[in-house]
Image (tube, rainbow, N blue to C red):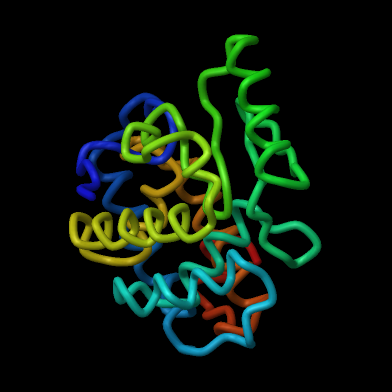
Length: 208
């Protein structure tokens, strides 16, 4: 199933910033990301999202620490990933089952909601829904995580490094403030879950 190269996980990017500022951000992010790749293992998976991350990481050669920390940033609640989490126009909701999530999706769509993120890895329905057979399939953890891993891998190929791949996963290509906030949240989750330690550059960059 092809992943469209031109799409990002969220809505339209904010206004463009000068090239120098973009280059500075990229350099800082690349320097900061050294913390990410110092560990290659994770404790035994505790829920379905985490189990699927193990499979997708091996299948697409996406570092498990990055996949796990992105998932924790997207749907983490009490240090556990949530397979039926939703984000409705910026508001997070945690549903108890697929059927409850589908019911809620129908309600908010009828009410005019456009930007709705779904599942373990918070796949955006507006931008990526057409890549799935149905809304219900977006809430199947194996399909949700598999798509996210392939999308991250494609972004890595396009951007050349995992830092910017993660930044693009959440925010549009010209939305540098959102990219920085998101990358620093992911890095904090990686450190908290034992995938590395803050480097001096990372601490300065993120104010840790």
